[in-house]
Each structure stands twice: as structure tokens, then as C-alpha cells.
Image (tube, rainbow over all chains, first blue to last red; front, side, top):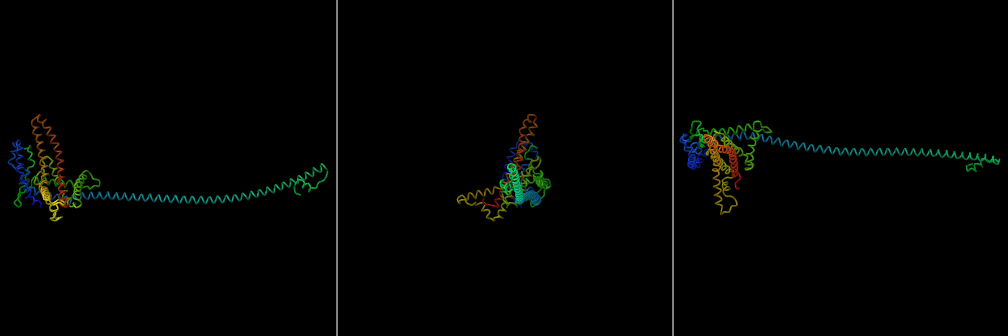
Length: 203
Length: 251
């Protein structure tokens, strides 16, 4: 449609400068004119030659319409698809990366929680074990102390009785010695009881 | 003849003429290069999108860069509403860019150096802008466009006049800018290249004298590649700006 509208409009502005411009060109190129006369009677400046306008407009309309159709239906959708594919791919990759990062952070958090739990549990077990061992040790020590105390007491008793017995024998021996000494010196007989009494022992 | 800088813009018939509705038509070298432009764009972009790799190769990178540059332009200027104009802006940009670039090859015809081609594209854009404006906002679109808000009543006629002139000059500037740049660039390039050949034919002194214009021609070639891209970019971004006026009038 644009072709028909322009056929009436396009030549109008072109017509005016046609004479002036063509004249100017010819004047300017005067020295070269000698060679170009062989070209043959082209008085009109070619780009402004209105006899070529209808054909050019027709073919421009044909080829530009063809170009528009090819671009809009065939070429541009293809390139758009490529760019969209890449865009989607990049977006997908970013999403995956973000998801993986989230997963990693969750895993780290879970690991740290697990570690803290395990530490707490280990601490509990250690505490408990230490308490239990402490109690056991204490009990053993008490038992040992008790048995040792018993043994000490028994030993002390034995020592006491042994000492008493020894002391008694000492007195006996002393009394006997006293009797013997007195008899030898004085010839007097001293009773055992008196001798025991004199030596401080028990009768 | 080889030195004539105008010769490169000559239109030749490649087939017999035929008539439709009183107008004379023929398949010309201009039409051939329009076809070559379409073929180059489609071929290259299909090649770029062929493997559809996740990590793009060189060709695919260029295709994606091309797509994303126009896509970003449309999105930034037109906003999310502009999505349906993206194929059109992309086609316009690609057509102008590749037509300009093909024109940089020696002996190739430059489609965009034909005023009728650029004018047709420009008028097509402006007609589209007007249709979209009326379709979106009704006839009050013109009111919104030509009578801005918050302008004192005293200077309103002048502002409206300026707005109307600016609106009417859009197709002219849009079409003539591209045409003028391509035409002038190719003529200048050809003139300097012609100097080199003419001077070189004069013998040793001429060859020495040809060094300067040769470097000039090389530098101009680089400049013309820049202009070829820049004009395509300007055409596309102005199309976006004008379409933005249609979608969101009242700046």
C-alpha cells in the first residue's frame, strides 16, 4: 500500500532540486565532460531520474515486504529462541546453584547441631561415668578403711593382751627374782604374794 | 567514462519493460541489489542461527549482537508496547545497513543512493506513524501532537506552527539524510579514486602526486563504512522516535 501512496508524493520534492542539482553537477564536472559525452544523452542526474521511480518503488515494496515476512516469521523467532534458551539455561543454573547452596547450608547446620548434640551427650556420659566411678571408688575406699580399721583394732587388742601377758610375766619374773635375792641375802623366805605385791604387780 | 563519478548511480534494465496501470516497470540493477540485500540479511542471520549453540561462535555472536542492538533500541525508545514494531524496525535497520554495506563493494550498486528508495522508506514510516497514532488515540492524536500542554495561549499558534512544520519535515529529513549521505560519500570516493588513476597515468610525477589522493581515498573508505552503519542506525532510531510519538504523544 505504501507504494501507491508514495508514487504521488515522492517525485514531488525530488522534481524541484532535479534541475538545479543536475545542472550543478554538470557544471562542476565540466572538465570530465569530454570523456562522458560518449555515454550518450543522459541529461538527468540518475538518482533523480523519475522514469525509474515506479520500478524501484515496486521492487522495493516487493523485496521489503519479503524481508519483513522473512524476518518476522522465520529469522527473528529463531534468534529469539536461542537467546531465550540461553537465558532460561542461565536462570536454571542460578536456581540450581542457589538450591545447592541452601542444601549445603542446611547440611552444615544439621552437622553442627549433630556435633553439638554429640558433644553434649559425650559430656553427659563422661559426667555420669565419672560420678559412678567416684561412687564406686568411694565405696571401695570406705570398705577398705573399715576393714583396715577392724584389722588395726584387732591387732591393737592382740598387742594389748600380749603386753599385759608380758607385763604379768615380767612381774612374775621380778617377784621370783626378788624372792631369790631376799633368800640369798637374808635367808628369809618371802611369800610369792608379798613379792608380787612389792614388785607392783598383781597378786 | 571510468572516471565519471555519476556513472555508478545509473539504472539499467535487466529485463524487458512491462506496464501496469499506465506505469512502466522493469527489473533493474537497483531491484537486483534490493534482492541481494534481502538475500544477504536472511542468509547471514539463518547461518548465524543455524547451530543455535548455548555458547555462540563468531557468526552466531554477530547475529545475536545485531538482534540485541535493535531489540534494545526498540525497548528503550518505545518501551514494552514497542514489541510488535520490533520486526519492522529490525527490517528497516537491516535493509538500510546491508544495502549501504553492499554499496561499498566496487562495481556494486548502492540501493540507498536512490532518492526514490529512501523517500519511499521514509514516507512509509511516516504513514505508519500517522496510522498508528490515529489507531491508538483517534483524531485527538493530532491535537496532542500539535497543541502541547502547559503552553501559554499567546505563543500557542507559534508553537503549533513549529510543531506542524517539524512534523511535515520529518519524512523529508529522514529520506534525504540517508540519500544525501550515501550519494555524496560515493561521489567523493569515486572522485578521489579517479584522481589516483588519472594522475598515475601521467608518469612518475603524476604517481608521486597520486599518493595524497590515494591515502584520502583509503581514509574516505573507512569513513564511508562508518557512515553506512551510522545512517542505518540513525534511520532506525528516528523510526523508533517517531513511532514513540504515535504511541505516547505529548512530550
